[in-house]
Image (tube, rainbow, N blue to C red; front, side, top):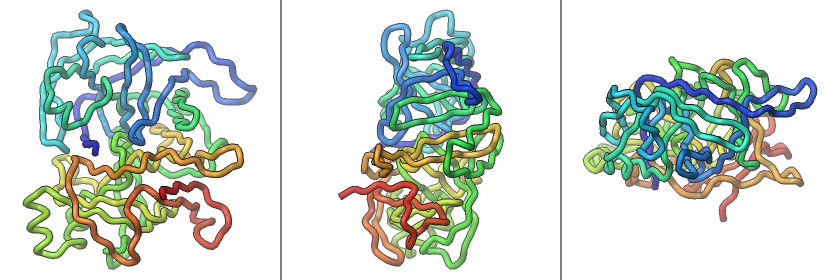
Length: 356
């Protein structure tokens, strides 16, 4: 299982210099195309650094860039300044060295990171993050560009801010920006709730799982007093599966983790929506336009293509108690996704993933 963290610090600025790209008449002109790979459901950008290949995690929940490998950073990029980096989900704070510009090259463009942080010698943090990457690129990328991710083609395309890609996608969902952090608000009634409530969920592409509830009220509703005592003492949560109304979408058999402990700096949100949902779609994250655009990944026959890896992830590698509310559903990332207009009873599925 992989661990998830929320990184809070000063935002960095990224500059991407793209090679000239041919475009069809009237089609939006991209700034750059960079190769990606979906690993543990998450988007990893595959670039070239000063000494060879570099893998950088794309994370909408991270407010600054962080690099873990000193060899990626030229001496002239070290400014001499230091800053504290908080990892609230794993309960760690470390001191990082402030950076100037660090350049990486892609197939059709160059990525130049400015004002990031170098964090080295913190083995405990890297192990807690299960960091199989050299660094993290966060919200600064989305603040500057409209970002399209195509998991099937293995390409991330960057467009100038303000580019409208709506006509190329089937579904649009509103993003609520709180500062530079993207949230999704939607109304739903979970099986353990007595009535429909509004959920305030962080859109977190750095978390490889499906949905997490960090709001204490959900934990209270799904556990007995005896269970709460045991789970809280052992930092365990509850793992379940449910059918969820999610804005314009309807998910069948969504894996959900309900935490017993609310991480610091997460009290203002009900939880998060992770990368295993995004990985099923060619999608656009548009901070400036405050929207998420989605089209399911399909094969040549128009059938949905399975992208997610089938593993169960908890945010901080927590153990869990499995519980069911209503019909018993198998708990693994095997869920069917419908548009609300084409939910069960209709013939057309917008996306589907099946694990046997």
